[in-house]
Length: 120
Image (cartoon, rainbow, N blue to C red; front, side):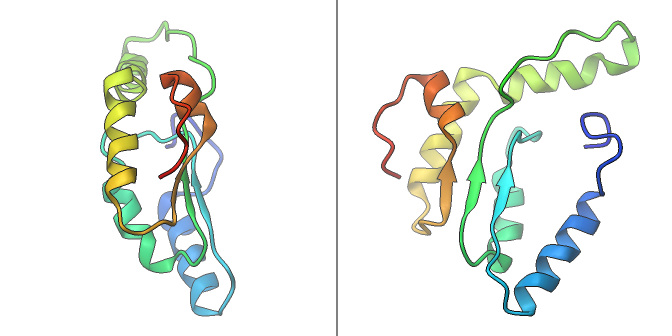
């Protein structure tokens, strides 16, 4: 996360804020967009107990340029793997398999895959 969002709060800080808001009785939603993990359902499962509304999953809307630094290449390679058609199809299928209808897929994923049946 620090590579793609250098000045943003850490995951731990965001997660603690979500839990606090949920426990205080606020309606809570989460947007995982762009997702940065190949299997982000580990994250979804961790967040679900503290989400009263929905979890939205989306992809990065543009492909960033390649890094010129060798130390950064791994981030761009992972980005391409996570946003591959095969992985996005797995994400949609997994969302459809959840009995919990709070999992939502953003149009950015459906558009990329040319899927027009948006019912999950």
